[in-house]
Structures are given as C-alpha cells and as structure tokens.
Image (cartoon, rainbow, N blue to C red):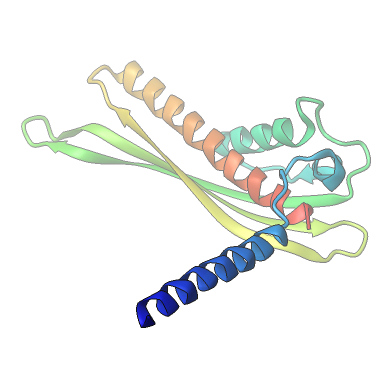
Length: 173
C-alpha cells in the first residue's frame, strides 16, 4: 500500500515539475539579434568607425563598415562612434633546426574598441577581441610575404565579425 502512495506522489511531482518548467520557458525572451523590430540594423547603420594607422587596422575597419551598413558605405549622420585600436603579430610555431626557420606560423589580430553615443559622449561598450589565423611559411620569400598578408587578412576579417557581434548585442538593448 505504501508503494502505491509513493508512486502516486512521484507522478504528481512529475506533473508539477513539467508545469513549472513550462512556465519558466514561456517567460524566455529569446529573439533574433537582427530582427526588424529590434532596430539593430538601423542602429548599426548609424555607427562611424575611427581611422586606424596600419594596413591590418584598415582591413578590420573596412570589414566593420561593410558589416554595419550592409555594403552601403559610411553613414552621413552617425549617431554612434567606435574608436578602434588594432594590433597584429605573427609568430612561428614549428621550428626547423636544420634551416633555423619556421615551417608554420600563427597570426593574431587584436582589436580594442570603445563604442560611444555621439549626442552625449556616453561610453556604451568597451572591449577587446582577438582572432588567430594559422599559415604555412614557404621557403620562397614572395610566397612567405603573401602568406603573411593573407593570414593577416583572414584574422582581421574574423576579428571584425566578433567586434560587430559585440556592437550589435550592445545596440540591441
């Protein structure tokens, strides 16, 4: 008799748990980041990006401008300003003692950014993002230079995507 009571109690607890979980899940506010009703697309289109002094920094900036405005160029009347600082470096990862060179390397691009509202100068978000790209370093000098540039471009594009996602998340609030 007591086992029937425990079984009924367990079933009742299971039903109560399902109802409670259903109630909690119904209160979730998950929505697409770029949904029309969030206004993120319009806010991103009103972001200007600071000039940077290096080739890799220019790659990051150009990708951000393209992402923010969907290829439309820079905004005429920006409401937000992003100050960018971009650094990059390449280091060898597989050392070949016979030739005193590296056969493979890794390029890391780091982007520090500050998002400000232009109207009042309020800082909305500041952060750092980094992206790494791996590359093979051939023995030919031109091939090595081209591989380094391609690796920097890949890492710059990835870092720009990460920063753009941060900016979109901040502007969606």
